[in-house]
Image (tube, rainbow, N blue to C red; front, side, top):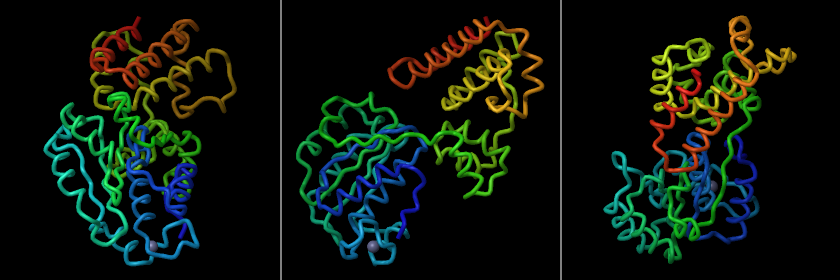
Length: 318
Ligand SMILES: [Zn+2]
């Protein structure tokens, strides 16, 4: 059976090899942006471990009893643990520790997928460390996070870390058109809005939240209220920071008379051309830098995101 996962080919091959050669580690940490496919790959990894077919193929067969149980979402040796409310709490980790010592019911190993582990409380993380240090032989822990820096170095060092990268926007747009019948003019906008994370793009699509190409207000306005409205929007949709950069980049390209193929938001080109004369080249470059700096600050540090976004939006007005 071909694995049905889009992207992450290298990670998948690595996991298939790991299972085929029976060198499965006790704990893994999957790191990558929200919606990029970490959970999908974690499920597939569990299926590889559970699959009962002979070892002549490194992929999961899709037809054995274990594979069918996985596909219908009820394999007894797979457990999900995620934040209850906002946090992953110590009680949940203690419960895991109580259960993990028992032998698996059907497979050779039990698999625990822990989602959003960056939302573990400190006590929960310290408690989990004990299990990560010496995971029972017949178990595999797969930790998922979009914010690896929120974890203790000791947590990270006890796991085998696998990185998940977004799919380049152009490539994702192509996939959306070819495999999900999205209209080409929507696909690009959707791919950019999702920052290359396929799960996020599909969630938007499912919710009918298909991006209409509208020039962000902040490019046109000098009113501080516009800055606060944008900051509010970005607090709930941090992935839109990447998209904001693409608008400023278009302004820069238009100002320099770049060929139209380089313009991302071609459907808004007339409006952008109308806006361009208000900007100096330096101001556009500064705007791009401010957005990128803020994104990096939010992604990589424990900064107060709300405050950072407000400061950024006010700077964009100047
Ligand atoms: Zn199978």
